[in-house]
Image 1 (cartoon, rainbow, N blue to C red):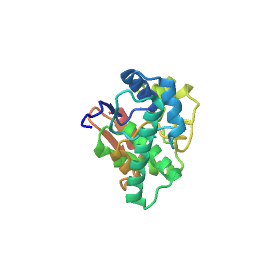
Image 2: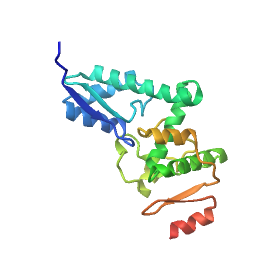
Image 3: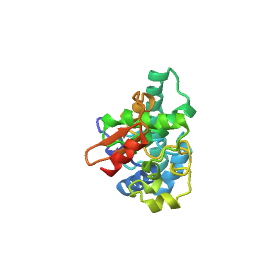
Image 4: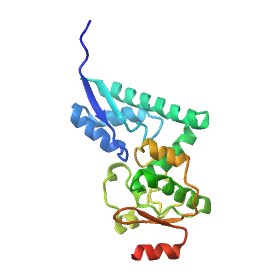
Length: 217
């Protein structure tokens, strides 16, 4: 009557993908990775980002089905809570778009302060019908930590390649943080259309001519 169950700690870091997260917890908890992925697809409302980036505590010896049911269920509650506070509702189609934009922000931003600015570039480009042309969209699934090269951009013909296809990827490319989600809902009000990464930060501009100068620098 006084004993407490032994618990396992699981942490999902923002920017990670489900494929690599499942591989990690399969190793840590001695579970079947394929079963984890199958149950994730069964229970999750979203192909990617169906588990909220957070630390979870689960009973020692938990099986694949119960683990995925728990993680996706808790995440659904969290997403609904955030959406209800901001929109007054929770519509999964709308939230999928939010998570998709937030996931791009997560991959592209050098820090949390830049997130609303990255968000503004995404919305400004979408509004103008411009291709997003963002490397981070190619860091989906198993390519989460792969360096995006010109060759990869040329050879990848999926909808995740925003150099070739207009609009957003079909679904999130990774798990976004709460700050990235908020930035996706509340972008900064700017006219920025371009940015380039330096060692310390991103440099933003609304002019392609200025952008080329920044790239040269």
